[in-house]
Image (tube, rainbow, N blue to C red; front, side, top):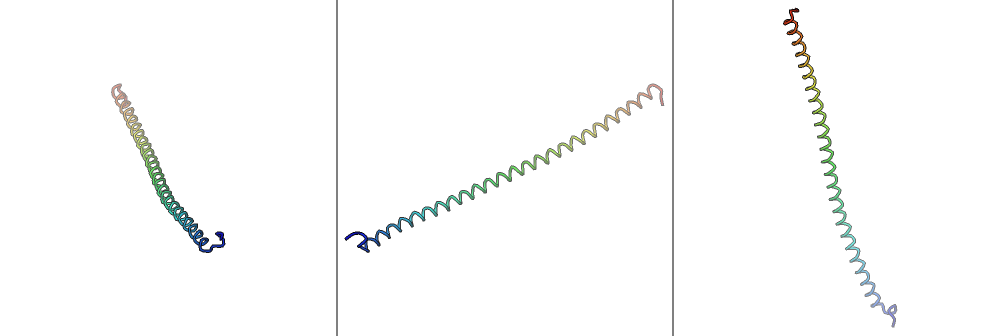
Length: 100
């Protein structure tokens, strides 16, 4: 009797094949799920790093603008002081030389 003629043997062989296929599919599904979790974690990590970089860039830009404003104010005050000193010198010089 050949294997194709023995239904019980064919059923056992089919059953064994189905068990192997089921095991492979289960392993594949678990692998896909674990890689999906890992990918999600990596994407979340990348998003976090990008947000930190964006925040730092925005902070640096704000600090740069604040620094530029500070130097503009310092320059304006310095110019006003120099103008005052020059005017005071001119007045003092005129008083010393007898000019009113």
